[in-house]
Length: 112
Length: 114
Image 1 (cartoon, rainbow over the protein chains, first blue to last red):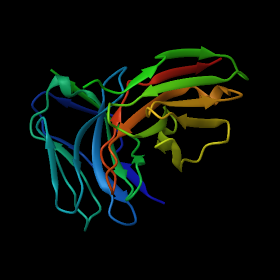
Image 2 (image 1 turned 30 degrees about the vertical axis):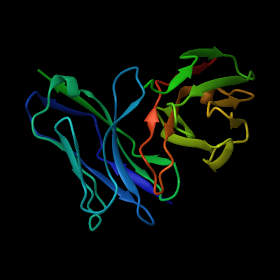
Image 3 (image 1 turned 60 degrees about the vertical axis):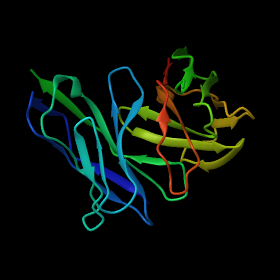
Image 4 (image 1 turned 90 degrees about the vertical axis):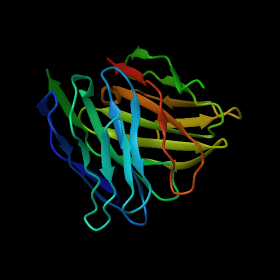
């Protein structure tokens, strides 16, 4: 079946550091790919998405590129802030289904 | 435009009881999905409803059920609660887009089973 694998956490960085959270997927067909973020005590918020190969999703300084050849969708940000501290989930949406398959989540902590 | 709302936000139940959770989607969204979030299993898909019909179902026992009303509001029910049902239950709504559009999540209902 379809699956998503994220890098193990937690990840701790200093403010203004460069961030990469790795995400790879296994899927049949042509899934859409997403990054969601969850702040403490809240539901999930969509951070960015990409719907086809080579698409780049971006939002709030975060970026991720849909790489079909490596089945990856790594999340990057050039300079993180304390307010970016949260849990980040990579997910795919199976073609033709409104169903998300999530990775296990990566807890990110940014220290001032 | 109001977001996805879920009620109640917190719930404490005893083993063996049943519980009903409610979700109101974003206006105009006709697809509603439910997810269970636990520290051990992460985020798992429960089921999805569209136009009052269940279209997809995850790998959960029959104690977990749901329904959707004509105004797209949805409820999920868990009968004969077990300790392992303690979790954050998230509802998400989306527009119907072929290939899967983004889903918008509510704040969740935190269910504790004692």
